[in-house]
Image 1 (spheres, rainbow, N blue to C red):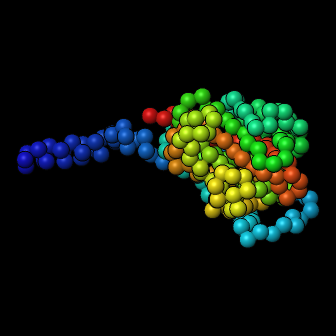
Image 2: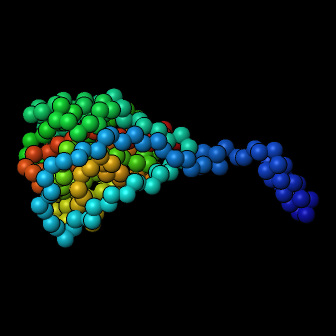
Image 3: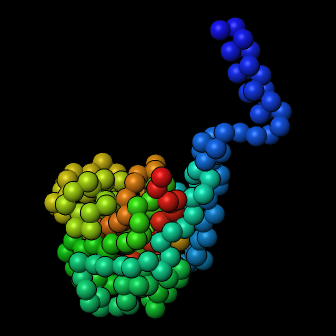
Length: 226
C-alpha cells in the first residue's frame, strides 16, 4: 500500500511540474465570457412607475461573467418561433441577428397579453447565461418576465424556470420571486448554471409604456452538452 501511494503522489507531482492537468479539470476552468453591449440611449422622460418588486436601478458596470472554458455565443442565427407569428414590427429572426441598437428599426413588437419567443439551439447545450434586451430607448419595465429552458419544443416536459418576476402569477406560469427591472443597454443577464436544454423560451406581458411586448435581441451563452 505504501508503494502505491508513493507512486500516486509522485505522478501528481510530475503533472504539476510539467503543467499537465487532467482533462476534466481543464474543462472546468472558468474564463470570462466576452459580452458586447450596445450604445446606451440618453434622453427620454423619467419613468413614472413604482412597485414593491421593482429593483433599484444600478448604474454600475456589470462584473465580468465567468463560465467554464468553451462557453460561447450559440444563439446567433438560430431558428426563432413565437406565440405571435406575425409581429406588428420587425421579424422574429431579428431576435438573434446581433443588432442590439435601441432604434425602433431594430425592434420586434409582439401583440398584447402574455407572449413568448423561443430560440432553437438545434442541439442540447450546457447553458450558462441568457442575455435579453426588450427595448432600451428610454426607461421601461416589462411585466411578467419569465425565462425557461427545456429539451421539449412544446415546453410541456422537463421545463426549468431560470427567471420569473411574475409575483401574482398573472401569466399562469407560477409565482416568481425575481425582481422587476428598468430596461437599459446592459440588458438582463440570467444565469443558467449549466442547465442542459435545446430550447430557450422568453415570456413577457406588456410594459409600463403600453400593452405590447418587445424584443431587440437575445443571446445564449453555452457549450455543447456532454
